[in-house]
Length: 317
Ligand SMILES: NC(=O)C1=CN([C@@H]2O[C@H](COP(=O)(O)OP(=O)(O)OC[C@H]3O[C@@H](n4cnc5c(N)ncnc54)[C@H](OP(=O)(O)O)[C@@H]3O)[C@@H](O)[C@H]2O)C=CC1
Ligand SMILES: CC1=C(/C=C/C(C)=C/C=C/C(C)=C/C=O)C(C)(C)CCC1
Figure (cartoon, rainbow, N blue to C red):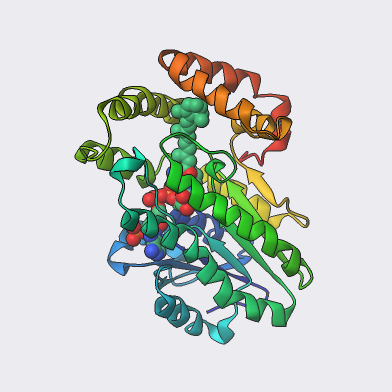
């Protein structure tokens, strides 16, 4: 039951990771300001969430089935909510895809877009008309640093997040007219099942169709560097949940919210050279010439960005 004055928050992809921690953090709000509808595509995966929610389960947190890839599932879920009333929609569900392009089928690529891009579009299309009628609402989208800057061997995942950034940047203007505020959350690496699934998938694959040199670059250069970066910079899902709660609670939230200060110079570089050549060359040298020193270079970046650039990110603390 939603108490008077409580905001209804619907979150997608709450069976693990960032979505799970967001659901729990908002449900445990000291002032009980939120009623969280934590959704997942398969309720058999609810145990971790229910355990973490503790006694908020059935009070400020309820569960619902929702598969962002299915029109019917999205409709059924929203129709099941009292008056279809959602104050805050958090689009979190998403999947990764990494590896040499030659070894990835078009079907796999479509699945990534179906989840990460059309999943968000489907959710917004269903919730937006009611928000417009009520002249108010918040839409949060968990994007990624890869929604702002391409990362080698993440071509299709990056494209799906860029698509979402473009979509939201366009829609945000129209929605502001109806007092609906759109905010993006842009984490760098976060320790969740996303990382575990990526490592498992990569171990199982033998990358058919890709030439030996590309496979070597992926396995021997990119993967160790990427793991170094996860180890040195990885945030926790609680960090991202805290950032998101801050964005929800801000009276005038920023549109873009990077959660990790390391990425502010990377994004700044993109805007400093509008031709894009600098980013391509810097990433090339960083990966192929400094790859073995990745740990050192990342630690240096961490040190350099610990002060002034923090104000450009949303801090979890
Ligand atoms: N971890 C990271 O390094 C980063 C992650 N992100 C983004 O954060 C978001 C959350 O990922 P994270 O928590 O890390 O990863 P997890 O893999 O832990 O969580 C992803 C969640 O999305 C759900 N999901 C996948 N497909 C669907 C679907 N069709 N319908 C509904 N739910 C679905 C999964 O459910 P199920 O259990 O059923 O598979 C799971 O609950 C994603 O959008 C991701 O792109 C952004 C930056 C970095
Ligand atoms: C290897 C490599 C990089 C890797 C970045 C990674 C691995 C980022 C991961 C982000 C994630 C997981 C986002 C999820 O949405 C940099 C820093 C670009 C610099 C060049 C070399």
